[in-house]
Image (cartoon, rainbow, N blue to C red):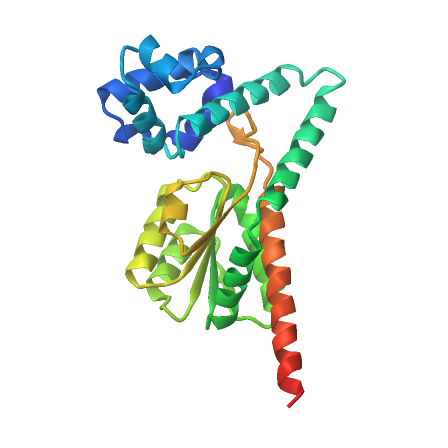
Length: 270
């Protein structure tokens, strides 16, 4: 099908999953993308009737694309419509206010969605790791570089390679005594998934920070955290905010610092 500008960022999210669909499921996806406004208000049963398929086919299509189910797929469709609406109103006075409010809402939901037990578990993985290596590419790289710098100041041996060859080399040398931290908004970047597979084979623990629940990267991770992030593309340039991703990473680093200080204090009491 021909992808419209407003659907381009959804395509970037699901492009690597589309080959998993069979012919019938691809037909359902094409219908959803061509009639997204209507589909976003449908139930799975209604969509199945409209596409002459079954509810199971609709559910299977959504799950193969990386969503928890049809409801989550519909939510993604609605997000693209919202993004397209904002894009169409860029020149209007209220567009900036809407954009800011969307970012505030994304950040708030991301913070509220953090499981404290998972943060504590991740902090323990950081504490136990002999070395920590960050894996990130593109626009997620600044988040990784900032986090690695903070960890270094906290006294942790850490690295954050900045190109494919370096990341490849690092992924071949980490052991089960180390820790890999992945930061990827889509959670579907092929190169990062290859590194994660290598690390899994060597039983290296992985903490993943993504913007998509149930992504391929989260399936490969020991622990994962998902942020709420709006996809924003202008002329195919990725301007999607990473502030929510960075916020969750910072929560982990602060918890790690606090736990480390408590442990040092307890040792000094003896």
